Length: 113
Length: 115
Image (cartoon, rainbow over all chains, first blue to last red; front, side, top):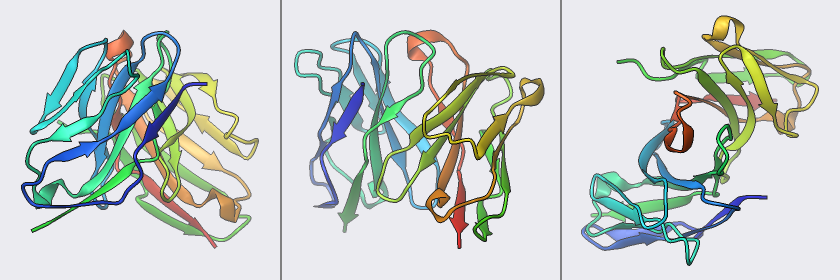
């Protein structure tokens, strides 16, 4: 079945460092890809998405490019802030319409001042 | 603009008791999903509704679990005869249901602790 694999955390970075969180997927066809973020004590919030190959999703300085050839959707940010500390989830929506999301296990990011 | 709301936010119960959670989706959204999230894991799909019809149920949804969405608005998730393994965060999400770009918006979740 479809699955998502994320790099294991926790990831600890200093403020203004460059962030990469790796995400690869296994799916048939062309799924849609998402990054969600979960701040402490809150629900999941959509961070960005991409629906077809080579699309780049971006929001709040975060970016991810849908790479069909490597089945990847890595999350990047050029300069992280303490407020970016959260758990980040990569997810896919399988091709074919009425389907629920398949999530990775999440990567915890801690940014220290 | 109100997002997805869930009640209660926290529930502590004793093993064997029944519990019911409520989810109110974004008003114009016709799809509603339930997920379960355990510590250190991503959310796992339980079931979803298109309006009032329950269209899919995961194998995770045992016979002790039942979900309803009367009139296609709010939804309830009931767990009967709770077990300690049911302790988790139960998440609700809703969406417009508009194809590949369909985006699910999540509520804050209900954290269940079974003693």
